[in-house]
Every structure is written in structure tokens, then in C-alpha cells.
Image (cartoon, rainbow, N blue to C red; front, top):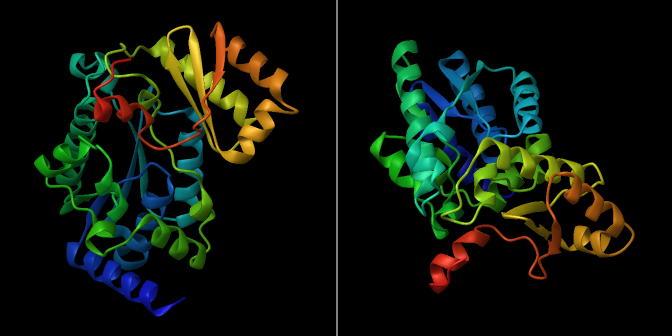
Length: 274
């Protein structure tokens, strides 16, 4: 481990130790898995990881989070989140994530209070400050701490330290909840979420790791990594069409720009409408 990463790790340990005890918003992604592993190392049983499941959170991610928590051997609990039932969320405004995170953090704060744990923390890192993230407002309002950000961790740092610690999530592709697949203003329903999940899960079974299925009514706009793109327009073309249409879409479009985070925020930045 190089000195810069070692120094950041020590800073992270100090940040977590100063908390005394905490509840972690644990999705099973790269960031929250590293945070949970270090927090368990520093705080022992004075940490509780909470995974919130809902229609926006694929079953595959839930199962993986449970396995990761078992590997870390730290206290873990799965709860239900009902953001899909919130009118402000389901209508899918540009600040949709605010409603989701406010719902999540209020539940985590209540659990922390009930369990006598001092803080609620999340896996936000330094790179997360660059995109449009209305959920951060909810974090501030609920007093959520972000130790990775405070310790100066970038996403590359998170992956590097995760690899050093032997965490299997060190190279896990970035993930966002299924609601991020819908253009702002498109109503989010359980049926549409299941449609997106079925299409993405089918593509992953073809061996694709970096994949997003963006929902545009009857059209699925599929964003892929470079390797996955070559596969989709080459040997797996017929399979891709079959899988996505079987999920309920009439048309299958491959986005030539490929996968990028916050793709649906591009219309906000440009002033264009979907």
C-alpha cells in the first residue's frame, strides 16, 4: 500500500473511531462495503449496517448485500423502504432522490436512536460531489456523516483500499437504484421497475457487467461498457433483442455514447426535454 493511501486509511479510521458508534446505510456497493468493513474493524459491535429494500432495489443486490455482511461478520439488518408510495417520489421530479434519501435516513435515524447508536453514516466519497445529487440535501437535513468523503477518499481510493483488504467489491461496477433508469417526469411504478430489472438481469446473465436499461416508454435505451457494447452488436445481438423484448419493450436501442453515470441528468444540464 502506498503512503498516500495508507494515510487516507488512517484518516478514515480516525473519522470512524471519533463516531463512537453508528448505523451505516449499506447497499452492498463498493463504497458502503469498504465503510462497513473498516467500521467493523474499528467499532466492533457498535456498528449496525442497514440494507433498505424496495421495488427500486433488485433482489440480486439484496442477496449480495446479505452475503457481504456475512463475510464482514458485522451486525446487519434488512428493512423495507416505501419510497415508491411517496407522491413526490413516484412523480419522478428532478429532485426525486431527495424523497428517497429522506425516507431512508429518517428510518436509519430512528433505528440509531432505538439502538443507542450515535450517528448515521453513508458511503458518499469525494467524487460524488461532482454530479447532481439532491439526496445530499436529505443527508444534511438528517445529520448523516460521510467518513469516506471526510477522509479524502476518491472512488479510485475506495477501490484500491478495498483490493488491499481483499474485499470482492473492489472492482464492482457502479450501481444506482432502478428509479435512475427513468427520465424525469416519467411516473415510476412497480410494473415499470420490474420491467427494467428483468431486462438488466437478463443481460447480466449473458455475462455483461456494465449495463443500464433506460426506460423510454416502449423503447429501451441500453447503455453498455466498451466490452459489453462489442458483445451486444456482435455475437449476442439476437440474444440482447430477445431478452429486452421479453421484458416488455417494443424496441431496443443501443446508446452509442455508452454507459455513463447521471446520463438522465444531461437533459437538465442542456435544457433539453425528454
